[in-house]
Length: 141
Image (cartoon, rainbow, N blue to C red):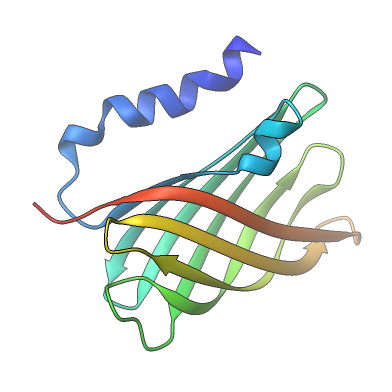
């Protein structure tokens, strides 16, 4: 279980190098069941972000990379979005698909994001995408 925490700790240690809008998020649902679902999203343009997700549990590991387009954002990358994802979970195989979601950002930069998606694995199976995360937004320096 200690190995699960290595990547989030390394990402947190590198926060002093951030120079654009970046969000770090974690899933409280995964924590309740002994796993870790961690996400880091970087703003590329005012309406586009790249998001890397890592899911680690005792019985499996998964990772996704997604690109999200935000319709009518208020404060950078927020509100309704659609996108594509690639990745997978060890038992389901690797593949890609489409996603949709919504992100709320408070005045104190607390982030709440929910999203769902579906896609195909390279071996012909079906893969899913789900996100229910809480986090914090780091703004431009």
